[in-house]
Length: 97
Image 1 (cartoon, helix red, strand yellow):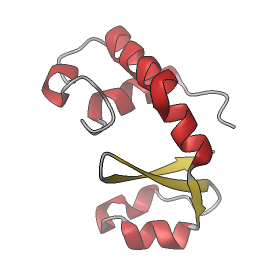
Image 2: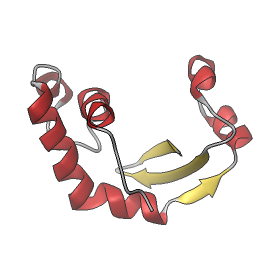
Image 3: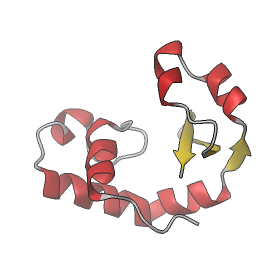
């Protein structure tokens, strides 16, 4: 179970995350101050994201590498847990500590 998400991670995810997850358009989020972005994340988290991640399928790091573009490979940590779920016809892959 995810117990802690750092404020900076919330802000980064809310600022750059997919429109299919957040109910606020990317262009609008890109202009928001950090406090507002953290609130957008928290709202999305409690609305559905936490449950989606908790039920998400676990996958191996090697499979993550196959699914992601090469530019993201440096961020894949084999020692972390990886999960995937689909929402709004899009696949989401997360790396959990």
